[in-house]
Image (tube, rainbow, N blue to C red; front, top):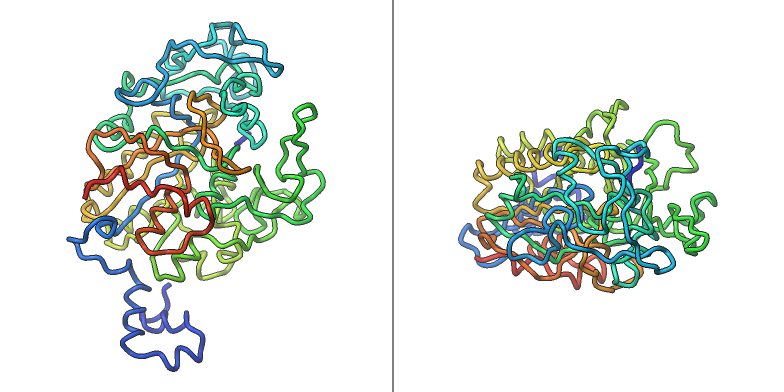
Length: 468
């Protein structure tokens, strides 16, 4: 399968453990009490707070591998390319393409459900494969996507794909009556959101938690890329030592049988988790299939590289932080029901529920997202929660909008984002420019945290999606 694809003791004792011994000894009782309030819950915010202070819970549902046009090209009032629209695509040398080849299935064989040839246009995948079926996958790697974007011309997606017949395919979520389409019509749909880093899931999950391309000094020679298009080897690590494509952590869980030298050593870059811990903001990363994977019995579609915090020394094996923050998705349900939902929540569904082409059905993933949303809407948390539903990256699928040029890492192609909340503008299409790092910016602005880097510092924190 290819993919890029605590509490011991009272609160006071917990808070004291976070302080240097000398400081704890001289800490005033009043200050310590204030610290405890922050340690066990969100910073105080009265229900009638104004602006972002009205938000006490941020829930991020992180799905897989769809471009904006791939799902919402026909959405009313939004900037999309509808099914049937002619598209300009050229070959690697710049010559215009006149036809699309037959799409391939997940095994790389011709997918006879699709035509053997068809015009170069945005076409309806639902005509051939229903949203409860699965299609083939497409390459989505760091250097490949940059070549596909072609300096903003967006005209080499077909040329630089390993499944060129599928690149221009779309599903009309309106006509198919898909669950997330209804959320988009009821709340706010963003049509100008870009995944922060070129390439696949690994790097974009890292951007979600650290806004960085992690370093691997002295990475194995067989992991080093050659970015020359004429000799392209889109490998896992850049020539100067940044990890950009899929690698696995040396901590648990990781796939069995990988040589120890091919597992990335513990990462030490600062993450949003570190920022929240230091500020006493409660948070969890809930992952589908996590408990099974930790026990050494992962489900077949558990994706190890979708667990970004698991790569970091702060959340290494045996640490209290790992047990407190990295948990199975089933705990989300129990935490909502028991009134113990953290201030910041990340939800990563297991493979079968994440919408990833190739091994997941679109409809299954969307139904799962709706079930997560409804757990919040049917709880006391609905009055002060913002839910961000988005995708890690485009999965190799074309979109017509050129991403902004910011730095060597991205952003990449446009992806959908839906903001669900009582605070979200109702039935609204938001044209504001956002990126994955905008999620970090929202968390940082709401809880008064220092940005991790330049990208999240500059990113818009979805302020135009809200009406307070």
